[in-house]
Image (cartoon, rainbow over all chains, first blue to last red):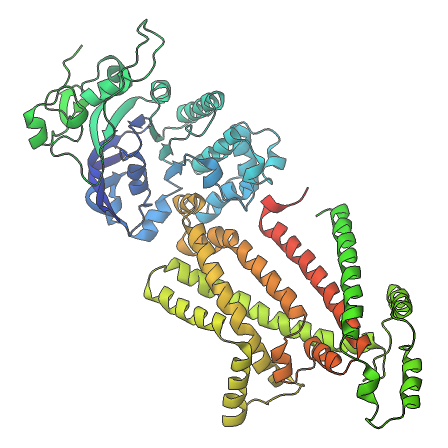
Amino acid sequence: MALLEVEDLQVSFDTASGRIFALNGVSFSLERGEVLALLGESGSGKSVTASAIMDLVPNPPGAIDRGSIRFDGAELLQLSRKERRDLCGSRIALIFQDALAALNPVYPVGWQIAEMYRIHGRNPEGGVEKAVIDLLTAIGIPDPERRARQYPHEFSGGMRQRIMIAMAVALEPDVIIADEPTTALDVTIQAQVVDLLATIRKRSDAGMIFITHDLGVVAELADRVAVMYAGRIVETANVFELFEDARHPYSVGLLASQPRLDTDDDELVPIPGSAPNPVALPSGCAFRTRCPRAEGLCAEVIPPLETVGPGRQAACHFPVSPA
Amino acid sequence: MSFTYFLKRAAFAALALAALMTSAFFLVRLTGDPVNLYLPVDASEAARDAMRIRLGLDRSLMAQFFDWAWDILSLDFGMSLWHNRPAMDVVLEALPNTLALGAIALALAFTAAIVMGSIAAVNAGGWIDRGVNVLSQAAASVPDFWLGLMGVLLFAVTFRILPTSGFGGPIYWVLPVACLFARPFGTLVQIVRGSMIEALNATFVRTARAKGARDGRVTFVHALRNALLPAVTVTGDLAAQFAGGGGVVEVVFGFPGIGKLLIDGILKRDFAIVQASIFAVAVVIFVINILVDMLYASIDPRVRIE
């Protein structure tokens, strides 16, 4: 049994311009010790997926219409609010994108990390204070005793993101969801944060969901990739297969639109058009309006996510042939 | 807040105070000649001149001003004409009453507004929010003299459970406090509600939820402290206003505070009382502003001055 299993998840939001279906039947699973990248453009539903798992979908206007999220054998959507809260932070932790906004500006960072232990009534060996200092040391914050008393605005962007990460891993959760943790950072700092996540991943057997639109980070960190488009998963594959041999035309387009150093081909091929309006998605396959392979069938039937090889799936009527 | 910063503030405050006192000196003399008020209408010109000489009003305005300025610098505020006692002694008897009245009313208004505003923000758009909105709008817009008179009519005249006016035990404080409470309460509820809604939608509140914090902790530990600053600013402004006396409320209830003393002083052309009151109130406002700044820095580390 997988550690985390999301099945047919549908999430919608009431907005002024109508009901938006942010997730239209998302299914994926995560194993212990695995890093799964959720890859997609803005608005594809990556962050909503994370919110749904963390019980952070604001209701109203948002609602989980159907589907299931099973974690360690328990159906999360049937737990009480209080039971969900108890799991959050202790067993499933979330790292936010923008650490400056995500850390509370009026409390010292040490206090905010220590709060993890306090909320969940944990008493680490040697006391909470020592545990916080140890964590700060482990994530590479120099002079941790002094820094723990400082406030978020006194840290650099990279340091703040490290503190977010320290907070998330404090209680050694089973699942770590990182929601674009490197997007707001400089490239050099990005590499340090990715290194830190890779170290954490090696040290624990937690499963990690890594939400990103950055293929470089995916290549460095992920074992498996789930490509999302317009609230659906359109392809899952292990990271090497995806880069070498993508099956869904959207994945192919995504790869072709990124610069690569390992080929002489210096021409980038952007995907034509733009992401569809979530209030009025195209009928059938949502990608068909931008897809070079689309035919009549694509406008009529939504392609289901089907197995296209060992351990890989694609949702396309006319997938790209194996290389 | 460093000591040099404090000194700089104090120096600016001293300059402002000097300008204020100078204008007070000249303005209060525009109210008229006290001699005409204190002597009977048919008093002889000789008696009038004698009193003017005794009060030093016979000399040129400039000579009076420099004498007065020298006295102020040595903290001598002169004798009250009406009370026939040192003016500052009279002021220092009234000032604590006003400060206590204002502090009680504001502390109650601030506390109640934090609770009501937070509850409204958590239930934004719901019927509780709407109820709080109506109540706070009404409290913010009702004039305090009307509230005072209605309070007297209802509780003192009809029910006879509270005194109409005067001063003494706690019972004399109920109506004045209630009247001064209303407007700050209404204003602060609106401010707390707005800043709480903003804080509750902030990313760090999502973080707190993701950490597993319960609703109460999320609202009162994470959101509220961030939402406090605007409420503290407005409370500081209101405190500075109240330091000048509860104005109408002190007069309506015959409450022996600095506001009533100041108004009586102007009516009685008691120059020394007016000047001493203005000086004392200005010093109190300076202290309130320093306290608000310190409170600011203790609530939000980002405004701490290096």
